[in-house]
Amino acid sequence: MADYDYDLFVIGSGPGGQRAAIAAAKAGKTVGIAERVAVVGGVCVNTGTIPSKSFREAAMYLSGYRERGIYGASYSLKSRITMQDLLHRTDWVVKREIDVIRHHFSRNGVDLFVAEASFLDAHTIRLDALDDSGVREVTADRVIVAVGTTTARDPHIAFDGQRIFTSDDILTLKDLPKSLAVIGAGVIGCEYATIFAALGVRVTLIDKRPQLLDFVDREIADHLVHHMRESRVTLRLGEGVEAIDQYDDDRGEHVRIQLASGKKIVTQKALYAVGRTGAIAGLALENIGVEPDPRGRLTVDENYRTSAENVYAVGDVIGFPSLASTSMEQGRFAACHALGLACERMATHFPYGIYTIPEISTVGASEEELTEAGVPYEVGKASYKEVSRGMILGDSSGFLKLMFHIETREILGVMIIGEGASELVHIGQAVMAHNGKIDYFVENVFNYPTLAECYKIAAFDGLNRLG
Image (cartoon, rainbow, N blue to C red):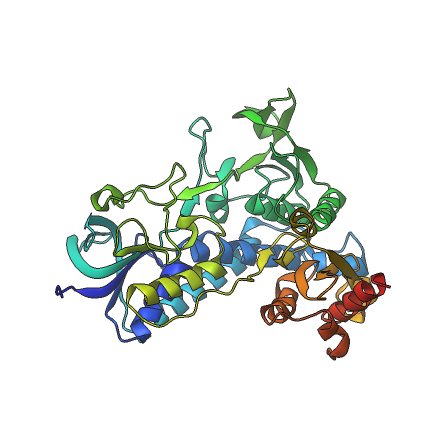
């Protein structure tokens, strides 16, 4: 066996890379990890998941959004909210996350290199340090690529990071706009559209697709659309964008968006959120014979191995489902498989969390998927206003729905929109993991008052539908 510097080398310190490195280190393997920026955590910690959710929490707190159901639509904790107010909380959370990750690497003996990594061959990696330490080469028996993604940028658009910007630029915004156009109604676009709307910004959401979040249960998505319109969000669905330009007049700085239909939208700022591409620039994948797809994603087998036998890839760079939670499990499994360690595969049922306002979380099949598959199912529903906890929280519009098999009564899917949805969904996930039936929720006791009572109400509702 060849003598390598490391048993495993990981490129990228996001959720997938972190979990891979720690799993290998805990098994007594020598591990190195490279991160191309001066701070660890990847997109998840620095510009994506953690900052956006912290930004959302700050927006909900300062705007008084959660209390408006009780104290009225005009309620706000702070009358003039600034970007500095919003980013104070975000910066605090990000700094602590980075410190936790660095501590985990140090405690487990993972060597961290702040450097740009590139392949010289399948076992040799060149590290171009970001400081004055220069260039070095390291060798590894196995390599995991976990570089994540970067925002897609149309070359015809003059991005300046302030007036026309991407989600990666939000943490550097100087001013909170009075009006904002969000181009792209995917998960990121919808999240930021609702966050800015909660802050009182007039938002226009544009997407060439005719439906919002077409992978989400239609009833849930329609409920979100209703909330958006209640928050004065203007939806321009089925509309393509032909041009975006900036101009100034005596009223200030503006962005003008020309739609294919002939409509023109004038706004203070524009957020471009049309897709992401694999952050593979500089990796020199051609040196190991790995060919990315047109969107910079890497193809892997069921064990997350690329076409190079000793090189694996995990996380957003391999595409669907592109979740921090699944990336962690992919990293863990890939590290175990690469090093010949026993490891269980990721569970079939994993939840989605969409941190719009209100938030959405789902696990299992939607009504549309069950109908298309010809599965005989029934639905049970419960509104937050039916449980005391919903009233205490001031959320009277949230609801939970269960899909279950008519014959076996097995739970097939759980869909939730409302406060705490991303936490509440895990109860349904646990029951589904054990092939549980809807009767479980009828027969068991839940704390009172809690949102979890919605499961029991929905179960009774579903069984009553069976007659």
